[in-house]
Image 1 (cartoon, rainbow, N blue to C red):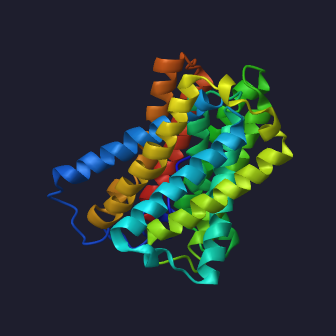
Image 2 (tube, rainbow, N blue to C red):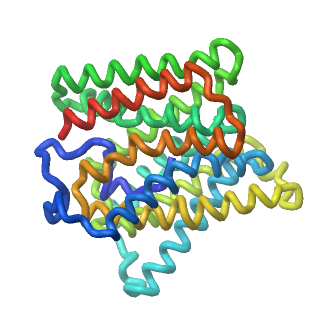
Length: 320
């Protein structure tokens, strides 16, 4: 899961219900910069699952998440202050509390569970299961009273069938079932944070909101890492070069470059086009996991992944 600001994209996988094409309403004649930014979101966010898998090979899971989001939040804050003045970071207490809550749900709960799971779950399989987030968003919005049409519910049910197929490796013992359950929990918690983000008074600037979300997520992940005893077992000298490089990649590219590109796209491109990242990221993650980590492509992974992505496509298409 990537660190994005839900203020600007609380439910990025689902296009707006009125079918609006995005800020400025320019569905055609998109420039090269738009396609370049979209390519960054496609590849970088899809590759974060691979990077997480590499990081947790020699680094404590939740502690690595705390380091990632603390570094990304601080770097983003410094960049905003340098460009626009320190006053840009000023928010009300209500906005701060809302951003902190959303950050804990998204990054500590959502991302944290996925990071824990990737100790035993292949990165591609984790990405395919995380692709179910839009399905949980629909169900949670329905629980909050939002009406859902039958076609959207059909897409949700189709996606959940795919999710059931993806758990087959856990039931057969090929993959740890506990890890798969953690990924599902992470997806549900991420969806909850996304839904609440649209109902809470977050800072108006999505970049400022992201600063406080990342820092709150880092504090939450650090607290959980202490409960698991991770800091006491952490030996920086035992961390491989690959894990340090992977962590740096997650900070600079996964949490800053890709997010900046995504936030920019929300203002420059039609939202249905931007939302296609939800279908492309899992494919990129599966391909990279197979290519670089020799992760197996079993029939449950390919079939279940195709069903999940198909369900998400139906949900997003219907929401449009």
